[in-house]
Image 1 (cartoon, rainbow, N blue to C red):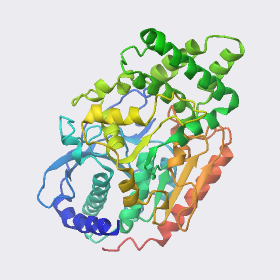
Image 2: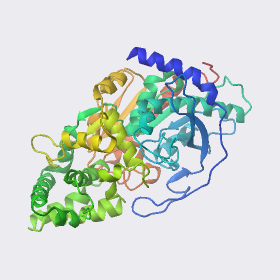
Image 3: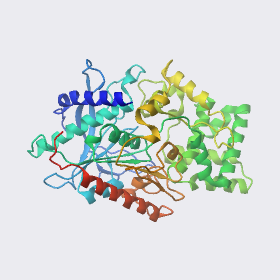
Image 4: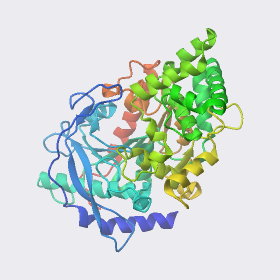
Length: 491
């Protein structure tokens, strides 16, 4: 692991200068609908949606491949001040199209610290794809390791952009701090691990730093977050759906609006995700209230659950059924590429296979390891599988040997079991406890979906729990920024 890190550091230094002066003109400002159909512009959900571009290296690990691609990014400078000597907050975009800088709790922190906020889009996602065709061959440059070098190159490029903009010497350095949620939270922690000289610290919100092959703790947490009554209703629903699939699969799939899913495993994974999402994003009543009421009143549980999936998961959250269809995932030029891209990262690097535990599972037992491995093979071909051991060897998993990283998790979030939940030296970990505290609660508030302006915590069942952790985050940022070297340091 140490030799790889030294190799990476040497490569980064040799490639940075080539890319530093590659900015492109501003792009167009756009608006897109949010989950639930609500349309918000710059004054609402986003601090800015004004696109900027830079040239990024395609392969940071090859001494001979010098190809580049256009990487989209965003900047927000309203709080930075005329001299622009304050902190730069690097917000990492993760496994989806990055359409602007969200106006969540990071905006509050940026205002408090007088910080600029910059957000580069993750390679391959959104408008930052090196290739038109997302064939398995073309996806070989999609990895967390390449993404981390993208961030390092972007960080240096943007620092030089600021210096040029303000007529400063090339040796001037603003203090930087990195933020991310979920997979981007893992990238935030890993960036501090691999490039400690480029950031004063990191916030890994729901940062999934542990690659997990059979992630049974995910389903176990769904059951725990649901509580005994709701869990029992979910389990009975799963049993009934399994039975109906055996007798008339088309009819039961049509009931859920998912008759296009020919593979039973794809269908059952959709149903499992629909329930898990309510706990992950702070909306437990969306599934538990109708199911428990139906069970008490002797109503049809499958029909009740089908209505929840159609109305909440598909309609309100705008989930596309096709994103669960392996035949759609095989398409190399899909309308929405995020699912194919993320599944490739799952199948090649981190796994997170959300399989049913042997006992007391909420999801169907057919959502198992074989289902996931078959999906990887069917969609991407022979030889694509997640080497979880090597991923954790490279980054350290929950034994990550870094410093000045804050880890945060919501108590109801199934993903927290892939995060670092125990504090260690210079790496505090906080669990935000409330009945609707889920994925990224510290930055997103409650519920986590749909979007909450400024990360509003007033709808959390315990706003005080959220505010207490936010105060701790602020203290760590303040301390670590003060401990960072002077802004004029050179490296």
